[in-house]
Length: 232
Ligand code: ADP
Ligand code: ADP
Image 1 (cartoon, protein in one colour):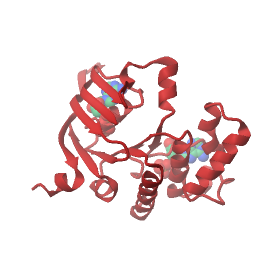
Image 2: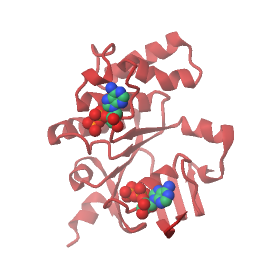
Image 3: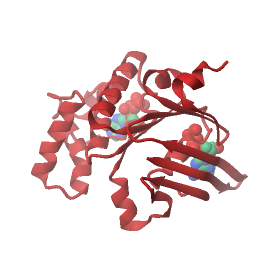
Image 4: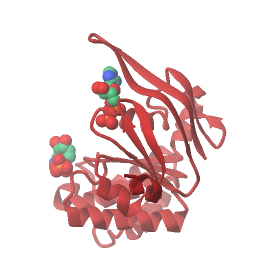
């Protein structure tokens, strides 16, 4: 289970103190698809960046299965990060490498042999529907296919949690639906917890079971999607 306890994150800037996240309390159960929705600047990215230690809370704690991420550093944090996959709006692929090489990359970083990494990457390419495209370069792929590579790469180290930062925002509606169907499928097959940030209600309605609505750094509403969206 993921738990945010009284989490506040402020940034000191030339313009003054920015309260990116304020007094957030949030529990996310294993295997759930939890949506975090809000306008640009609401604090969504800062919130999930604290989950993989890319940001540290100014106050409060962030933990996964009672391990306090916000208190880890160095090799312990790097190890923990391997159990968290992340996908992005602009895919963040390596453009000079093939589909297979992109998926192999985190496996090689984790110390797998080339042969092992290749075998695992081929399996993942198949899982995300890219069988037959392993030797293509990202520039030869459609947006949806690029995100499939991003998803396969995120799954490479067998994570417990997948973080999605506006992963479908650069895709057209039909491709968005296809990628969301893939995420649903993976959530079920791998019992993977998915935390997804989006500014699109449609995305939440389609795949999330729970949702938190953020405004100016605060969670203004949270609960099962059906309850939150039923209210007037
Ligand atoms: P969202 O993901 O909802 O668009 P962010 O978490 O990116 O929101 O940003 C929340 C607020 O924190 C914004 O006002 C943003 O400008 C500010 N912010 C985020 N990261 C930094 C940073 N590294 N330094 C200063 N301000 C930041
Ligand atoms: P989108 O269409 O979603 O904006 P792209 O796939 O075109 O995304 O590109 C995502 C990011 O990767 C952009 O920042 C772009 O500048 C960069 N990029 C795209 N193609 C290449 C390439 N062949 N080599 C290096 N960077 C690239």
